[in-house]
Image (cartoon, rainbow over all chains, first blue to last red; front, side, top):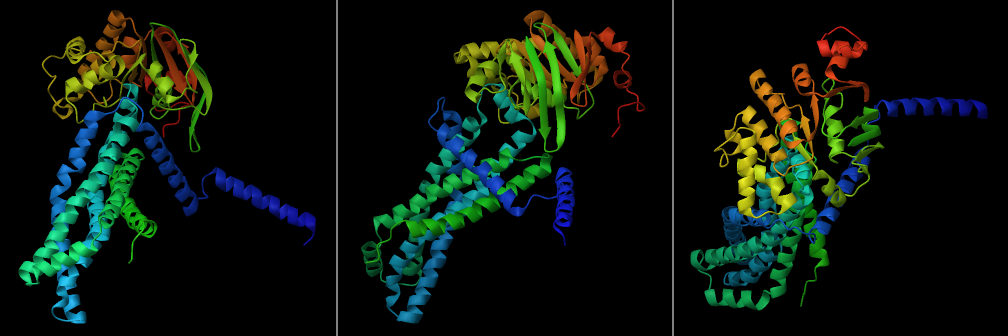
Length: 282
Length: 248
């Protein structure tokens, strides 16, 4: 094909593509949408971190959120931690009994404590709070958005980010480690209860092993993870609420997305934090 | 005085405002009329800084506001009170907390003074003894009145009314019109009213402006608008389905 003919074809295709783009028939790709949303989330996070240090602080909202995120999550965290502790205690008992032999079950103590405090409790508390609190944040802020309450906040002199996002993020950042610490105690206690009181494992050896092999850093690293999950839950919940559109259906979609996105993010971030946070093997 | 120069705003490919020019004099009530979806609400959201234009300028008392940062803008929004279409009362707050919200933010007055001013604002819109009620306990008309009390509580110089008569019965709508006139008379405020309700428009307007295809196509007092030669204006004010304005 001669060069001039090539140019001709190229020109026609360019016009066709331009027209398609003009009439929005070219749908934005998955990647462009992904990066667009990532950018939105990044900007919101940046603005929120910047606003933490700006006055006036919304003390009243912050205290309300501490109660909402922390105190009201106690029942669900209690149930989750207790039953995970029990079932983990059960499986470690079976594992030691089957693979190492009868009498070795008391060595399950450190495994239960380490597994719960470093991984299971922070993740499960994160997932539970994301389902309970992250969804509520998206629904509340989403409803405020579609009923113009966020515009009203702005018109009445309040910065919506400082008023809505900052107190929620700080409350989650503080309360998630508290809930996790509480869950650690309850879960480890439940594992101890199952092994010692139900299966008759020697209490002294179980406790001695647990105290010997569980390090303070194991618990602290779990709490660091929980704080990071708190930030994720609040930022994603608020972000989804703030971008809710189109009435009740839009709020519903925002709520679902808030839970799905924050749950996936918690699992991803947990892996990377587990890799990054130092662990002593010896 | 408010001066809007060459305002453009698009949402995706939807060009809502296409070079809108408008001047609003101090102390007057200007009613902006136009079809649903013609960009009236988009226009007043630009005035208060809720939306940033793609192009164009807005001057409030000679100060250009479209390129201001949020913190600077807050000093300007202090001059505005806004009555939202659905009142936009905060669900989680009582009527008193709603009305006192702007007062707390803008003035920093002590609680007792705020309480007194809240009662005064509610009394101005004809409401008494509702301070402790939650928004869901109010009727549509009462919500609008509480929304208006909230907008006037901190004594703004300009009040923006977004569809004040929408969603309420004609009698309550007329009561809201009376309130708009009373605000102008008593508080000497500049008012911008966005509506497609012609009865309300004639009752409250000093001047009227017709928004069509992203521009102001006619400005004048109610009599001038009624006698306009523009077929678009005539079709709209008489509410006819046939004419140059597309129905759908």
